[in-house]
Image (cartoon, rainbow, N blue to C red; front, side, top):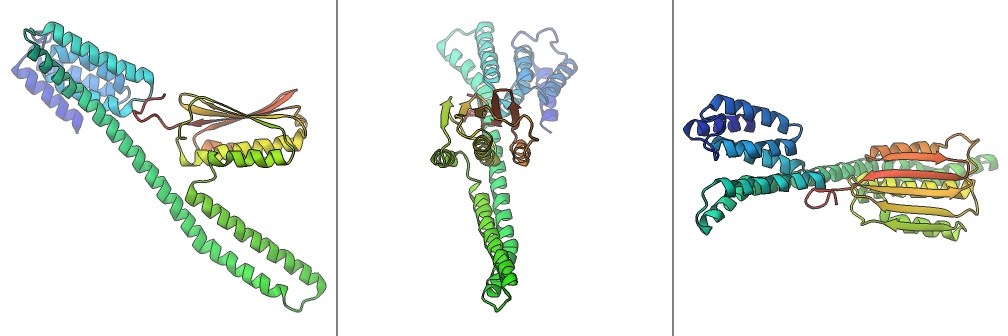
Length: 343
């Protein structure tokens, strides 16, 4: 266990020598330093950035706590998730470097480079290593999700596709068989439904393999509704970034589709505004149209299913039906930037 190794290093090294501050208030008290290190490690399990900031002054007072500093820096690197966390880590690193240069007897330029190299080795390298491990785990999780999606698509195509294909062939054979007129109409409807089911299945399998229509196909949806006579205005703000989950792109596409469908159904002729607002950590997607006329109507199953789809993608859906406006708003999480920090 890494925590046990750090505690052993703190006790062993501190037993031999003191810290940068001449041993500090707990000089020579190896058990006391072990208790301090244990507390910092306990904090790092929940608040790694805070634990790193606690380890900075501890590392100045105890030589053995350099291992603690490197450990907390690594854990902080694995959990960086905002500009605030990044600023705290950079601030703690700078404070540690300034304190070392101030407290150590640096009499030559070469000694200053040694101090800088020590800070890089104890803080910079562990933080970068933590970020690398986190990126690798995110990529691995994404590959596993993609593999599972492809497995489902393959199973559905092989099992359900085969059965629907058989039904379609049998229905087609009955269409040309000598049947009474009333039965012929029923058989024709069955054959048409079977062919439609096969087409829907192929569409669903293709969506599973490609990860769904996604935001890339939203312009096609808008163009289709515009051709149908709906006055749609699209507004975009912020810097686009990938959505956090593979299902989020499909959920965003469905929000646009369902919102425009509701607008065309309940407020025909009214203008509709489709907004994409890229926030630091989420995409705010809204469909707004005035005069919805839905106040006396129960919630549609389309909106209920849409809420479940958005929540399954890690997002949140809200529907506001006011006196003069109907608004569908979805919040979908984004992938952190390459450094793991929200832009």
